[in-house]
Length: 471
Ligand SMILES: Cc1cc2nc3c(=O)[nH]c(=O)nc-3n(C[C@H](O)[C@H](O)[C@H](O)COP(=O)(O)O)c2cc1C
Ligand code: SF4
Image (cartoon, rainbow, N blue to C red; front, side):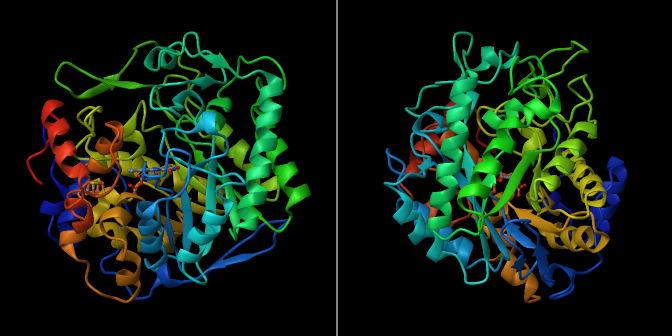
């Protein structure tokens, strides 16, 4: 099974014709203006902290590198990444997943924010550009925690499908008192983030991690489950704690606006739904089948977010752990993934449509979209049209930033894109950490081409048949 590769579509017209053939909607400008709509400043409101101004419509999305020290301190690799983000020209930097507590680290090299690391976070902050709005993503990985390498899930509720994936049948289920204490730890971390100079913190609600899991805890008894009010109790507790202790700090939320059921490789290695049961109530923003979208609760969540005085959200979808084609559309899957069950542009269009609906429905929110990297040569053409139509306030860049950090600066200056740096979604930046290696753009970034982990990455890709023919 092979889909048309975007790099083979040499003109905007060819790209548009291909998108039309797929029957999806991806708006694309004929040519990119400089600085154009993407160069317009945007004001981000926060009822407590006041307004922040991003000088343009590019945002860097959070991208961790699996490259901190064993006790959560930044390394030279982390500093290199942040330095490149600072030089990117993007108006906003939404910096990487940072654990608030050691047991919630997604891997033994995830950054940890506490009193012992806060000064180094302050140094990281100085690597970002003056005028670039800077935020830090705070997280507890919940079901997907691996603080020492092996799965150590800590769950919000029992899940008939995902419990098997991480052998969570006997996993620790957070009780209410533990969640009360964890919420205070988020507040402590937010205070430290403010001390380190960040403009905002993200109370992360995406990708299957703990707070995203809480959003589907319908059957959980007590204050943290049940109706949407209960499922948002954790967020409300954290927000009121932050407002009380550090009112000058803005708050943001990164949200998986919709989710689908887990996918698995079929006999042909193409991804397929794990179950054909028609009832799947565990997907927040889903329609109850596990395969469809219904944003009713998502809108209610975002109304409540706005009522909390929060003005900034990043929209994403699904999870890299159980349906990666939803979350990060790619032509080449990571080694533990599956061949795409759809043209990856269909996945891009799915995120675009949800983001557009949300942006139009919540005009007081600054909405950053995700999943644009697969647009490749046409990312700026689509980004300009999306922003121009008001289908998103800002264009978030994930993988593209690893291969081509200067893309925002080039687009805003009217320079032609450097084709050799365009992310072709080889997924090595995901495959490497799945095998305990650091993440980076091994195929295209000269630094990682020379990095010692590349030899091991090549070996494991051969073993897992994850290698591809284009590198
Ligand atoms: C290597 C890697 C690390 C990531 N780390 C994070 C993270 O720390 N927090 C987060 O919310 N999303 C993370 N993501 C998801 C991205 O922010 C983004 O949503 C996704 O890659 C889709 O956007 P793109 O098409 O521009 O890559 C990561 C993705 C990759 C590939
Ligand atoms: S390794 Fe590089 S080219 Fe591959 S998906 Fe990651 S950023 Fe893109």
